[in-house]
Image 1 (cartoon, rainbow, N blue to C red):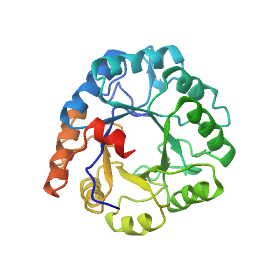
Image 2: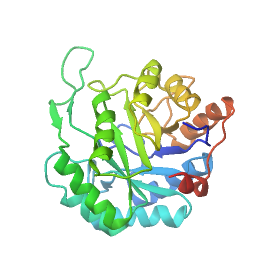
Image 3: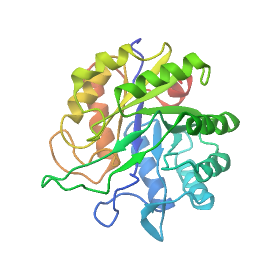
Image 4: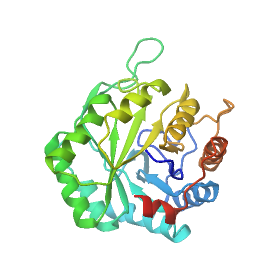
Length: 283
């Protein structure tokens, strides 16, 4: 893992975050402004989920809405790299695939395996009805086929140790070819915990020629985890999808402030921030 410049990604808005409770961008104009704010703070990639402004609590795969949002982002920030979410439950991937074909994003997230997606409140009740976030190999291959057509780089999101190893199996099987981009999603209650000491073990399981980043979810340990990612040669993501909390513990509704905090931490490790042009060359 050579000590390259650090690629910073900003996840502008989440799939489950209620905009009536949290100030997250929804409309095309809001998403464009959020992308510009993140770019000005140091992000070279913006990771996007999409909402219907008429029903903002829920995700949408309407190609018209998704295209409008992406066009606004590209208009406001032509240099930024667009990373589209593709996560759906079930075998029907026609919605995300239609959006990939419509937008042709430079990158797209691709879940590397299945997970019991669980969260328990402090009183022991389920935060939502338990469900399986299913991503069997045939579903992953379906996304890879479309991403090949649209010349979109897959970003493998790994929620547990086995998913990291699975990416190596995809490579060995010939499903994917290097270089690879892998995201360690840490902090989801039923996935890997946000523990910095896990990183060396996870890095050992990655295939050669892998660029990797940490996605730190929640409030506890996330900033020490991101610093450790950078120290070990990785990259890092922040944004309102991942956390509302700055290193000071202060709550924020600003993607820009989160990215500013991350860039400051990166520079404290004597590594520098990659520009979008440098990011494209690396990936």
